[in-house]
Image (cartoon, rainbow, N blue to C red; front, side):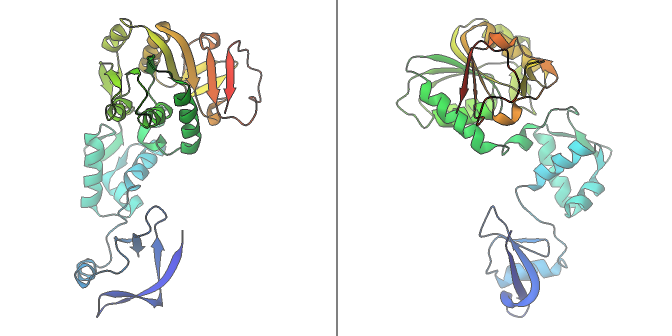
Length: 311
């Protein structure tokens, strides 16, 4: 993060480069700066905007797209927390933090009760919004490889999870590809519907934190169809525990897809190799191909008779 030495010229309402006060230029947005915890969307601020900020005694908090993610991270470490504690930890006013909490509550991420805020689900699972940017380049590598192998006329099923979301994004860049896609991922379906692909969103109970449809309705629907290939997302894979994931309901949906698919391809980035999660999804050899971007074979013995693809 770059630091620029600047000074506020209160009379003219401009920012000069001669003072000792610091402005931090946001790495995500070159046109946005933070002045003593004040978010300024333009470097050359207007007199009206500076007057607005001065009236508030430079007490406004940082306004950026990471704040709600920070709130979720804090609650993941310590839950519940009071509204006042979250305001202090994030450096924003009570009205601002209440607005952020309200938005997270509307998305089903948190629960607010008598001034206390907690995660909707306290578990070992990392909430979807926190994982969106994790190992993004690795997931995109896998997505490009996967889509390059999909053939016209195939009927494929896609799992939930951020790797499969990247596969969906890559699919819509191939306008000449004619395939039918089934998925229980609300997010993947919303991306795929922007294309000319045939897209079926499996119904069921919506699990908000993962934006996935689960439950008996989803399973009964899946069992009515047959798929050429199922792209399976996993939280962990090792020889002792096999393919594992965090949530039982999601795992039951995965098993239904596996039972109705001619081929099963597990797609997981290299950070998940050797790890284990709560629920065993299937036997290792129920998977026909493991696609990962490890630079070399896994550093542990893998009793796997299928194809191991390292990209």
